[in-house]
Length: 163
Image (cartoon, rainbow, N blue to C red):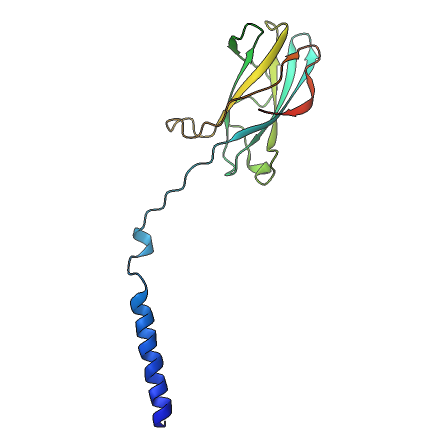
């Protein structure tokens, strides 16, 4: 090996050592990483009368992590008082609603809830609050949304954006 090649190897070695010295020495495993939860959203709602005592609510729920979501649902009459929704058997319910199938769909995943409308009359609005982490101090509670006012005989036949 000639002197030029040897000095070139030595220079590369010294430069390599200098580069290594500039890299921080904190190991990556000791650095805590905190990932915040993205809250779920109710995106669309439709209401279809089934018979004199039942309406089918279709609600689209989106969660960017694909978490299961609990949904608090109430109806508000013309007096402004919110009353908890009474479910009938046969729908998806309001607890543990999956969202993973629509993970990359901005509209979210649709779910059908059968509503017992026996004690409901006149013009009403639905109020909904999604929650994907109900047991951790409310850190998974999404925005509460309301539907436009509607009559149970007509419902909301075409989905409307939840606001």
